[in-house]
Amino acid sequence: MAVSGRLRSKDLAQQIRAAILEGRLRRGSRLPSSRALAESLGVSRTLVSAVYEELVAEGYLEARRGSGTYVAADLPDLRPSAGQTSRPPAWTPRWQGEPPSRPSSRDVDFTLDRQVVEAVSARSWARMWRFLARQKPPVDLGPPEGDPELREAIADYLRRARGLRCGPEDVVVTSGAVRALELVARALVPLGEAVAVEEPGYPAARRVLQDRGARLVPVPVDEDGLRVDRLRAAGGVRLAYVTPSHQYPLGVRMSVSRRIALLEWAAWRDAVVVEDDYDSELRFDGPPLPALAGLDGSGRVVYVGTFSKVLAPGLRVGYAVAPRWLRERLVQLREASGDRAPWPVQRALAAFLASGDFDRHVRRVRRRYAERRAALREVLGSLDGLARLRGMEAGLHAFLELAPGLDEGELAKCARERGVWVSVLRPYYLGLPDRSGWLLAYGGLPADTVRHGASVLSEVLREAARGSRPVAAAARALR
Image 1 (cartoon, rainbow, N blue to C red):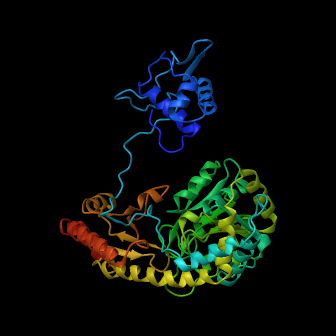
Image 2 (image 1 turned 135 degrees about the vertical axis):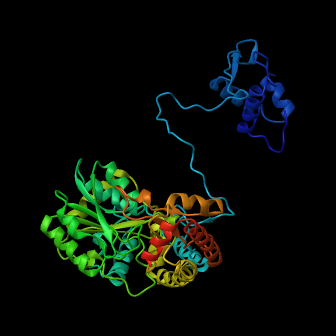
């Protein structure tokens, strides 16, 4: 038995286990006495005796009075046999189909699954954690609504940047925006409740609402955002989920007139609007419009936000700004769930916001994202009517609407064969799509890579149009 350095009891136990499982110590074979093994290994007899007792308790060894210690005769074979495969229990659910393929490191990945953001500068990050090292950690879990300093910093930022009239007492910190939506759904959505969602819309939000047993009512989106006239025509709806600053996934911005109409609908229906403001910081053309929650004067809007799209998805910090009548219920639900963002992350983020580093970071990354956006527009901004680039005013993805007659799925497959991956629009609809196209997440790619990938997409579309006279006619109509 090999010995290196100072042998510890757990090391000796592991070596004996391995020798048994590998067949070097056969079942029923006698081991040296504790005294003999201790002398040969140069360790204490007490250590060997303790290891023998441990392995007897685990079933690897047997102690026979007056005879010695033996390898257990009925030791189960714990090693997998050759060719053995892992099989799930018969009662577990089965999934059909092959696992989805993934882009390789050589491919250009424009898919929305790829959530890569521009990193915080190393100097700012280090300063944030140096500040944290001087803080005294809490002796308990802290308040369920989140760290007081972070709630103060979030409220200050939202008052300044988004026009919300809120204080720290209105903010509930969560481990991500989806978690915030889950809290709101648990508080407001009983089984079978009709909830209006944008069509097309954000799949993760829909899943949260469906998991609560909501009946989803899709409401169309046009160039001005959610069609409030269609929402008014939908009966029984008392909750609406919207992404007004940068509609997901089409990228349009809800106009001021639509925002006012939506708030009027909420007052008329005695309804609640959930405003997901997931990337309002990343606006390139013109100033942002006031948030719905900033326009609301009757406590009918729940505002949900996140830092994942600007700082890092791995931070997992989001928040909800709730009307006073709802806040305590959200706090109760959060406390019961036990789901809290780690205190060090909360306190470090509070310092990052309060110091001005967050604003400086946003200005820096906005410039870099603007370069990548320009590269995409340079190539795909003029496609002779084959496609129209939309949703470029804000955010980190764009919508390339294809001319009628172009098959988004087949052409995406052609692009994939050339090493460029895109997301197609169809899965973002609950019903039949009224348009088709590709969703292009460009934010996490260097400008040269964006330009190359966009050139491949342009080639695919032009080749498809040359082979189809109906597509050429539709392209002329789309110009």
